[in-house]
Length: 167
Image (cartoon, rainbow, N blue to C red; front, side, top):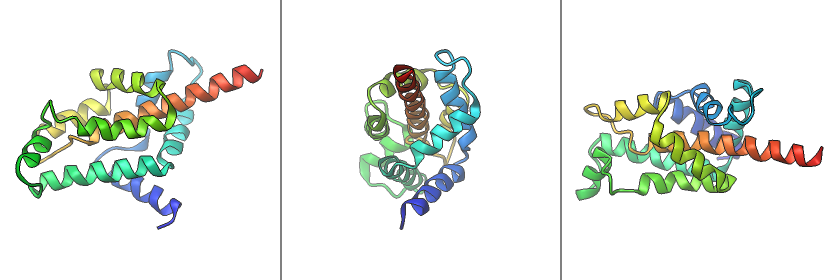
């Protein structure tokens, strides 16, 4: 599978789980607008797409979504099934997978992610609530979406600082 196909597949799998790129862009805007007053949702969407074009991000997203699906189908073994299904607080692999996305754009992503993960604005709150429903597992999904938004916000910050340094 070539890079374009993998990008398209990743975006489709996110949409299949009920999240649009525009909703992720709104999270990105939420994170970055206080630093960039003129920031548009279109610019945020461009950066979300750029983040999703990275193979490391695609690997994390596809892996996490599949683990959520396997948990929904009750196909994980032993204690792993219960930990993923209930989003067990001491099971931190969902955050570790999110960190792999954040690593692509540097340490600022970690603070963005921590902030948005704690507040759970917009679609993140919806994903979290949906994951607590019967027959639905979103243990990885909320962290992945938060990480994509945080990485996109970091990308914006890096690019704007770089432009200011050149001027």
